[in-house]
Amino acid sequence: MIDDTELLDRAAALVAAYAEAGRTIVTAESCTGGLVAGLLTAVPGSSAVVERGYVTYSNEAKAEAIGVPMDLIRRHGAVSEEVGRAMACGALAASRATVAVAITGIAGPGGGSAEKPVGLVHFGLALRQGGRRHLERRYGDLGRGAIRRAAVADALGLLEGALVD
Image (cartoon, rainbow, N blue to C red; front, side, top):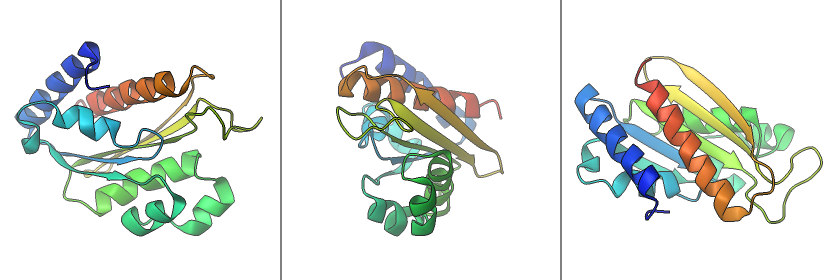
């Protein structure tokens, strides 16, 4: 992932723009397992921008580390709009960052169902000044690596969009 020139270039531009704007980022990642934070921190100078990152792969980690209510997970499932939004809000609340991005999904090869197929990913974005956003992607069963790469690219897109908010 880190060897992906296109994503590294986007991450470098994002880090520079966030540093110039005086904004900081927290990540809360499930199916990407810290790839967004890893990509951002591959950029020299990213310590001025990346406040922290959470890898909340299990339901318990989502609840314990960033305060996602277990009842919410039981009602909607870990891969849901509600949980993606709660992950972003929880990460923001548990950090000093100004922007939070969260990712929860099914990267496969197993774990999917008719209702929630492999390739389904929910993103949450929360801004300290009050904005919230959700993005749902259904990439299809592209393979685990391709789904995770696509999710990282979309997370960068959300962070890029947050700069104009």
